[in-house]
Length: 276
Image 1 (cartoon, rainbow, N blue to C red):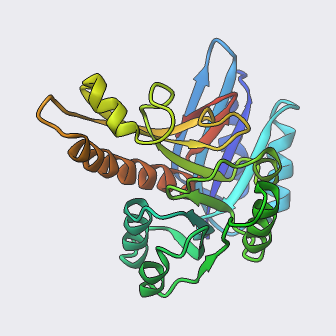
Image 2 (cartoon, rainbow, N blue to C red; image 1 turned 30 degrees about the vertical axis):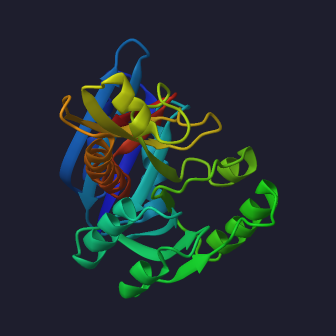
């Protein structure tokens, strides 16, 4: 059985040696290992892939004994994670994830796609995935999000992916799914806020288009960043071709970030991330 051991703690001399010794004493093999030390903050991060038969509780207890008291330790099996995707009307990010899913390139079980419009129903059902529409019409924001939470909780997902879900989430929703919501947005924010950001960017003559995938927090579009990328453009682009280029970047960045989360490679550190 393969597991991922994730450790976040204060740095000390000999931590890698001590942890490796515990793993050796449990007859475990290290398949892959990565670590990082923030010397300014004296913080240590380690991601280790291990194989073997062992007692999970005993292993964790033995590791805790040799680490500082503030250590955070997580042990996860190398298996598919259950995810739920939220969407609105745009198909590019959702479609890319669905294709990766049916191609076997996504280490996840997509339990459902939940949207506030019916536009993507036919697309989702072509892949044999449950589609649920929770309309926001005639509902307050709080009422709508409670209905959304009721549907999401039926699947108990480990991750929630916002595939261009265009509703602002309230604090209650974000706190309920703390550190489990992944979002994608164009990198014009905060320079081009509101409707038609590509038209705004076109009028300003921007020279790059980008996208940012990040965790969702109470601060809109300011959560810890997981993945980013850009594409260069010039004056020959119309706002429509700029939008098309931006959508290509968005779907790539979102899928890259999702893969990092599915592989347990992301450590949240303050309002940023460490990727191992």
